[in-house]
Length: 199
Length: 199
DNA sequence: CATCATACTTACCATATAGTAAGTAGTCAA
DNA sequence: TTGACTACTTACTATATGGTAAGTATGATG
Figure 1 (cartoon, rainbow over the protein chains, first blue to last red):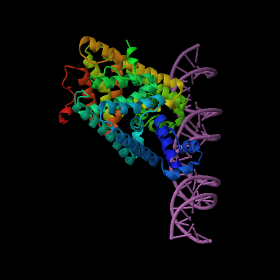
Figure 2 (tube, rainbow over the protein chains, first blue to last red):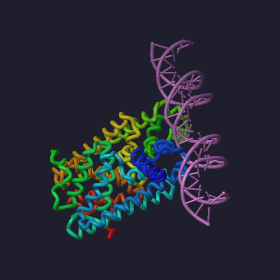
Figure 3 (cartoon, chains in turn cyan, orange, green, brown):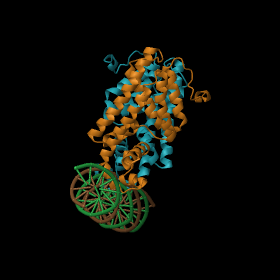
Figure 4 (tube, rainbow over the protein chains, first blue to last red):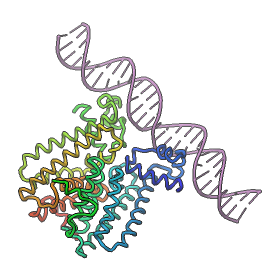
């Protein structure tokens, strides 16, 4: 892996672990055993780095969407989406929506626009999933597919904050109930039985 | 208002607008027309300031809970809770759960514990509301009251990110549908008719 | 072999930042 | 009126930070 890719990878990790304004060029350089100016060579300004991180995240999501499109079952497609967040809950990372949303007003207009594009793409993908799932009878919900997509996205994004603050187990509680709410056939998911411990 | 209170007020605002690591003692001091050391006088370290901001937020929530307890109608109590977030969506502020959740790993153990207490208190309050509302027949939902509380809290927290990124109107969409989902009697809320514009 | 681009490096800089030490003006109580 | 306390101030420091300018090693290309 080349330095540029490593900077992007570590930059995204730090952004989602500590926040974009909590790390510096020195932190990146030190961890990657290069001089801070090597980071400037690839990303002249810090905002240019933010923009690249966001756009890299968009590409990652596009790859996910492409792979997920091979899965015809809407319920399984939703589970794949939830699985991404589940992995982040384990590591303590929040998603880029949550991280970039918090740092939003410290970004340039260009970077904000990229964040907007990323989130729009995620909501659009979920909206199609909700529409498909309702049509096929896999999902049952009130309101428009897009509104349901917004509800699921907000549940997922903030559940990572909850996992950090209250403990990892809270993620599965949220994810399980969210899936049950829109999947009438499911009384429980394979992954978890945490709700049986609840009163 | 004295300097200490002003620092707390502005500190919380900056924390929720830009993130805790995006402002400095100088920023606070400059805005309040004092020297940065005056801020150090009241809050020796930046983490001490973070701790005070979080605990001040807890007190604010306790005041809200006290006032809300006078309202016997669970639906109206929920609307009062949602109203707090609605006001923040207007100004572009995110809630302290969202802000402190993003900056969580840059805080001391003591400050993290305070954040945990704040979020626990909010979830506990919502849990009681869900339990009461279900008992009285005002709310209908699947799963435990606490899990439903987590779902509502995550919807509200991240809807403020969505309001920033995609536009203020997204908040009302989320809030309206969330209320409809658990209030079987309501087909629409008094405050909004945004869903009529949806397809 | 020359030369050109890539991916760095050293050297440097202005400013920002968190934090400390010591001094001072005003209030208040014995 | 003296002394203590509060709420600041000035003066200062070490380090961090984002960013620039100029030089260099390496490898590919004509």
